[in-house]
Image (cartoon, rainbow, N blue to C red):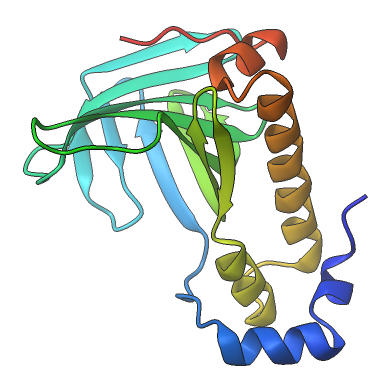
Length: 190
């Protein structure tokens, strides 16, 4: 059982956290994915072209280039409402090394017509297939609660979602694709 967020932020833990860590404080990041227009509006309002959307019974697949990015040439993501996650695999320009295989965002996912929306709830996972899964940005989640950008209940939901994913990925040999398949969310990648 994950402790209540109010308990996490009380007493000495809160005091120590405030003085040892300074998180970048921002509201949850929202993105839009318009399947008909083949576009992605990023959290900064930038409209991006999408090469491919693929809608399946378990989620939405997206493949998109990152024009002008110095390290990443393109990425592909699966948005999986059943698991409340976005799983991303990036392709890098020659000469740039990466030390992970998948990046997993904890997100709230909704769709109205052909437009999907994600609200990123701060927590991310880095998956090194066959080796490890690492949770990132817990400090951002705590700062968001402290600054009333999200409720403690929403943060609790994000933590529970995160640790369910960590448990599932770990139980499948740190293989996110195997975990997704066993969870009823099979994925295919380019």
